[in-house]
Image (tube, rainbow, N blue to C red; front, side, top):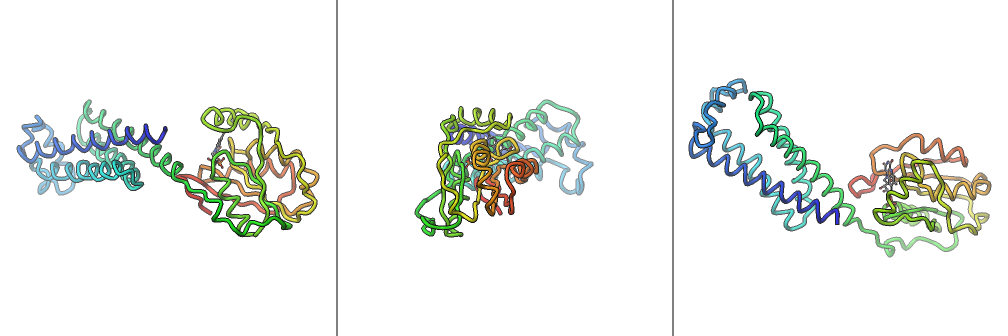
Length: 298
Ligand SMILES: Cc1cc2nc3c(=O)[nH]c(=O)nc-3n(C[C@H](O)[C@H](O)[C@H](O)COP(=O)(O)O)c2cc1C
């Protein structure tokens, strides 16, 4: 749903900004003195720019640049967005940013005016819409195939434990279990964690550093030497079901070789999360992954 809405909005911006740039650019080329757009009086303001004696004696160069930088560019983004290609979302976002830069130059050299202010806001809106659409696109097409992880074993001295609302942490956990040829276990809870409402419910637990009661209370941890805990970050700390897990099993876990893998959206791992989990159990290794834009980075 979020992808659908933001894609339509981004298409609106790329078409609107693109068509506007063609109209403006063509008017400048038809009447290089700017008279079609009633911009004759603005020409002297361009004279502060480099090479103005060659480029800005009329509106020909500005018109061509407007058509290329804001017209053709946004048409290319529109084309790929219609085809629902990732590059369309990337370009749509970048061209929001280039519009902001373009207008910043105008805001610096022209006296304050409504049109520039409006287009500056349009640029920001296109950039934000593009970014949200791009994130939504990556999340929508994030692929998890259980069949890819055929090394996962039923008998091993290593256990990967994870909680995942969506598929991101799950994928990291499966990759790790596959690499180590270990066992894997998903932690579940009866609290509401799915969907948009689930997001806010989880946020509430996260904000208060509350545990979520877990369903897996009969795990025999005795046979494992190594435990790898894979948790999403919720409000700068481990996710509440994992908090429930480490609290419930803290005595058993204290005798194991523990690795914690934090999975977060932001590029950085909040240090408070490391501190908190170490208050529950001794941790030998910490790893951190970011799923920003739907990718997993080391
Ligand atoms: C309630 C909630 C709070 C979150 N807080 C943070 C945060 O503080 N920092 C961060 O980088 N990511 C945060 N995230 C994003 C998740 O860590 C990230 O999207 C992760 O990939 C989710 O994994 P999953 O889809 O496997 O559950 C939060 C997610 C939720 C649901």
